[in-house]
Image (cartoon, rainbow, N blue to C red; front, side, top):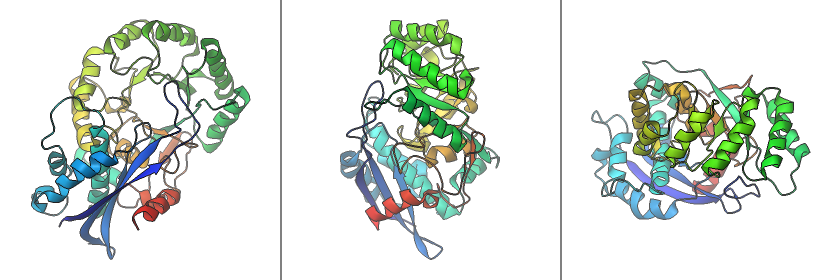
Length: 388
């Protein structure tokens, strides 16, 4: 059993949307195919991976460091001791050889792309959906058959007014979502409050609306928004300040009684542990959004879960960023609290299998082995056009 080839390509997901911090006019992702010599259903097993939106493609790191390390390794270093499958943990160790600790930066994204493809291949070799494989390994076989999902949108578009925002959010509700999320911080304070009130008028109650500032605010601005929004009873207030400014998070948490959400821009076990130690977050209400596709993959995400457990957090407080099938499998297999979804943006990487429907804010998973990319027609068509 061996990995015979690893291919990577850069794909554009550019659009004219923006949040409070960046626009997506130049946004790209890395897409990767990991070829093995294992035959299933008459074909070699190929695992696929890509990075979540918000971080750019990692082609140089993949080509110059991480892929060559895997391909140069003794094949026996990459497989389980019983030689019946690839070993994601051993492969991770090979990729991270000669990498200094700390300063995680963009390499966590490159490793996450490969890690996703590895787990896709591992589940296909075992003949199981990834969520079922994870449940068998880490939850005594118990998997969630459906997962809470929310629709992330409400971006700032050129010329987009309240009427267009309302139409967008109504579209999500019509698709079966119960909870929606919108951007704040990219407009003047009073305009943002009007936007929030517009969407609340549609969804009916604050529990069905989350807001996301994308780390834009300094502490006084974050506090001012928090005070203005307190009466709404929102589902959560996301990334109000810089994600590494733990002291400001702690100060805000002391005065804002509603739920805070953060973590999507923390890319290591150490960062996640420091967040819990120093940011004043509350395990009874706050949400952790670490994205495995951006933070060294599932191997590192499992370490994060151990850190959460050690500090008294339930995995149900975790709702990963990313809006893709990989994180959905983790949510079902590891018993997380849900998953993000991007119904109208970042196509075809966002979204889930064609055969699964959103019903009352929940979605099931396909039974096909692996992550299930083959069940999402537009995505698998793109992947096959890249790699054959």
